[in-house]
Image 1 (cartoon, rainbow, N blue to C red):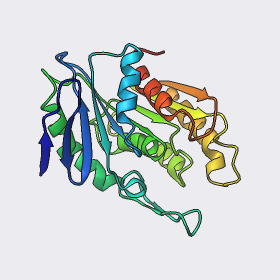
Image 2 (image 1 turned 90 degrees about the vertical axis):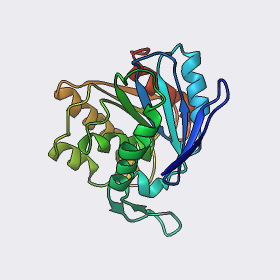
Image 3 (image 1 turned 60 degrees about the vertical axis):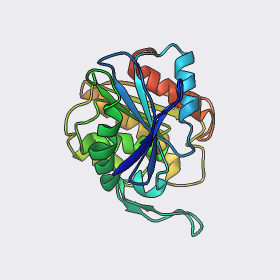
Image 4 (image 1 turned 135 degrees about the horizontal axis):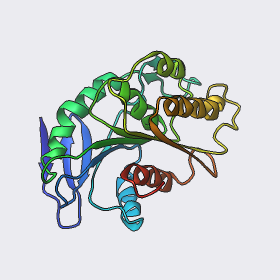
Length: 237
């Protein structure tokens, strides 16, 4: 069950579904795409504004927040790096059911005409989730993994050994050039993992791009996210 409220002019429509909060920035353009963005710090409004300023138009952005981040975005359980950290507990499959069976229908009833295609985007663990979803559902045909946590244990092996439900039209990858400069033995592999997965997809004739941005993992989150979504929309090359 979900409950929603009608947004005012130029404001998103807000709806609550299964404990998650969704902001829907709708377009009046019929038969347009919908981009789903899973967020950690409710940066959806800033991302939408950046997309508008870059010239993107004719799409709906559905921003999901209120996630149990280490659970909803992780494909399987792994132990925490330290005793103080929250463990990743592998709830991606359960959340993906909520996303595809409950959130998508609620969002897309606000899209005029039919949805031309769906994209899935995310930063950090949500970038990992965006790729993992390709192996579980045909709902999304374009994805953006922005500073994705592709260092995740056994994920690269999973990508290389499993078949996607359907080959996507396009996949965007980006990373900060300082993200692999860490003492953490897991996270220091992120650049190699990202580049190898991107090359693997490209080798399967999937349209891909890989952008290396200046800075570490926490730099320019909004701008990097908007750039990935803009590329999916065909504004950026």
